Image (cartoon, rainbow, N blue to C red; front, top):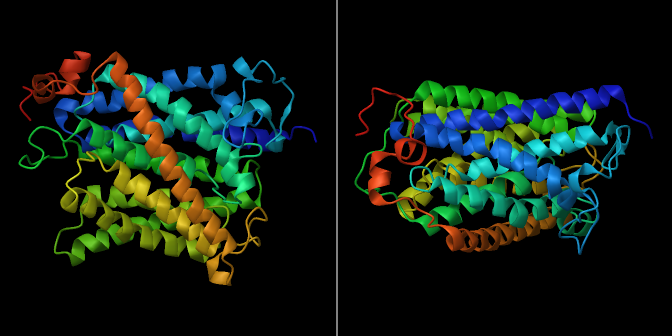
Length: 415
C-alpha cells in the first residue's frame, strides 16, 4: 500500500497540534504555580522539547516501535532513523509516511514527561529533573509505548487492551510517576501552613486553551488517517471536555463556592484526559457520560490526595492525569464497541467482560511499571545530584536559584 498524501498531511498537521500542547502545558503550570517559580515551571516543559526530540531520533522511536523483545521493548534497528526511507509507508499506518508517523509519535514523547513536572513544582533541582526525564523516557515511556502500541506489545497485542491516544502510555504513566516522585522529594517547606496563591489566571486560561486546541490533534490524529474515525474522535473529545468543564463548575457551586476560572480550566483538562483512551472506541453518548463523570472523579480524587493523604502534588498532575487516565481506561472497558472500531471488543455495558478485564489489567500493569521505573530513575539521579534544592533556594524561588531569571523583574521574591 502506497502513501496517501491526504492522510500524511492530516497526520503532520495533527503532530503540529500536539506539539503546541507542551508549551501550552508550560503556561498552564506557570500560571498555577507561585510567581517566584513561574520561569522554572515553564522551563521544565521547554527543555523537554530539546532533550526528548534528540533522544527520539537517536533511539527512542526505535525502542518503542521497531522490533519486539518479549512484548516489552523494541530494538535499535532504526537508530537515527537510518532504516526508514523517504517514501516508506508506516507499518503502523499503511497510507501514512513513516516520517509522519515518527513525527506524530515524537510529540507524545514530549508532552508525557512534561506532565510529571507539575507534581514537583517549586522544589526539584533543575539538573536533577533533566537527568530524571532522560532516564524516565528510557525506563518507563519507551517500554509502555511499545507494550501498548508497538508490534507484539504485551498490553496491546498480548492482553488485548486498547488505548486510543494515550490513557495508559501518557496520562496514567506520568500521573503515577509524578505522585511517586513528589513523595520521594517530600513536601514543600511550610506546605501545611502556607496559603499557595495562583499567581496568573490568564496564563492558566491560555494554557488550557492551547491544550484543548492541541488535543484535537492528539485524539483525532490517533486515527492515523483523515477518515470518519478521526472525525468521531474529534467529536468525542469535544463533548467529554465540555462535560468535564461544566461538572467541575457545578461542584464548586453546590459546595457553596463561586464558579472560578481555574476550576473551569481544571475541568477542561480532566475531561480531555478521561476521553483520551476512549475517543476512538466509544459511541458519542458515552463520551458525554465520560466527561460528566470525569469532573467529580478527579475533583474528589484531588481532595483525597491533598486533604486526606496530605501529599504535595503541587499542580495536581496525579489528580488530573493519573486519576483521569485510570477513569478513562475503565470507561473504555465499559463502553467500547467494535461498531466504532474493530480493534476492540464489546464493553461491559453490552454484557461482555473481556475488554473490561483487559482494561483493568493494563491499568494495574501501567501503575506497576510507572512506580518501579520512577523509583529506579530516582536512584539513578541520586548518584549524580540531590533531588531537591536547599531550603534557602526554595524560599528564594527556583526562577532565581536555578535559572538566574525572574518572570517579573520588579518582583521582590517574597511571594
